[in-house]
Image (cartoon, rainbow, N blue to C red; front, top):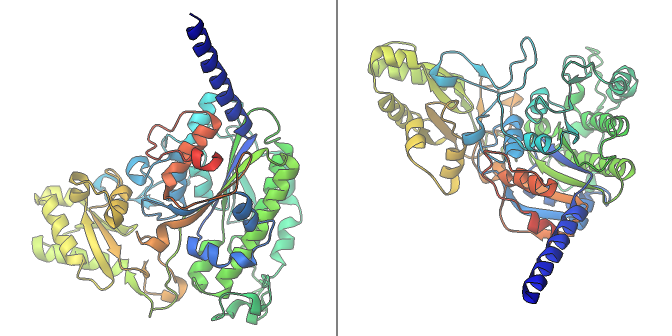
Length: 517
């Protein structure tokens, strides 16, 4: 009897210790920061020029996962946002791009239909659902430069979904039947944005301090965003000041909505902008792209200072990552241009020559060819036969690495390398009939104007799927994790830290032990 009593006492004591440990490590708020494009190798290349209060603070005092990857194709910020908050890939969550031809139809389906009234997409089974189910008092916020990304990162139960309207440069908010908060109205009516509009993008350092020395286009000339001829102003989302403006909005949000001010853990997703457009316009190895890192470094420093003041030091957990990497291509010599409009026409002509003149192809989206299934049914042709024929035809195109058919991705499981990333990106309902994989550094464009698009991003290559991942804050000890971390692991990790259930479709694994031990 005495032994049983001692055993039970030991179990209760151990349980209390574990519970106490969980309580100590549970922050007042978790902030998930996602920049729209940032390569992991570039992130470390520029580290010597980061400030000690920004990225280097995360690196030197937090956990840096040097081998973080997407196990799917991060086609755009919406796809990555869905992957991060659900802990699953497009194969499970269904967001494969901004739009697609669903169920073999001859019309486009939007991931988010904003034509009349903004509505949230079908349930994604995300970490937000579990946070709200566990405690409805937890405040959940989504804020982004891009509207669609903000909406994907939130849902109908989220307290605030805020984005920067590209039409008028105003912050917009969706929150049930309520009007936008008074502090957001004041921010929109204030002089902050006008000040940013009249501030030129200038280099952070002297030219000699930059790692990249092969381009200095932007800073050679007058960088004032006001044109002397047109008197137009560059939209703020295309300048580094969009993230500065977002930080202003965040400061008001934390102050007046009292985020992280009580004993209930809140959750905030922040989607930064600007970086992808710089990669695309100037190329991966330009001074302009390098300077973009330093501008974001300053905003991370501002964010940390704000959190220290509003929430308290060591009272929050900050996660930083990227929606994707980017390709190396900065010129036609390093890659090439794949004209998807021409591919659409040629594939339809090929099928018409083989099976009779008709409208065989509905469209080309997200590097996927969609057949018109009504035509196929009417013509009584084998769908699998057409898929194989087009896959064998398209791989002969210049710039195409390989092609997969929907039939093969439905019947066969892939577990390694490029095949696995394609498999994880394929969704039974929303994906096309033939998935085209371009060679590294090739860009898929609607037309042949290479000057307007310099980098491709819908690809399974290492420089696209490898991204920085850093965790900083309450209970986190300095550590470098070299083991592979999948981006589907983030949601299960957040769930464990917050003490809530994993999202239903989550396939990732928590790496909490790597953070706290």
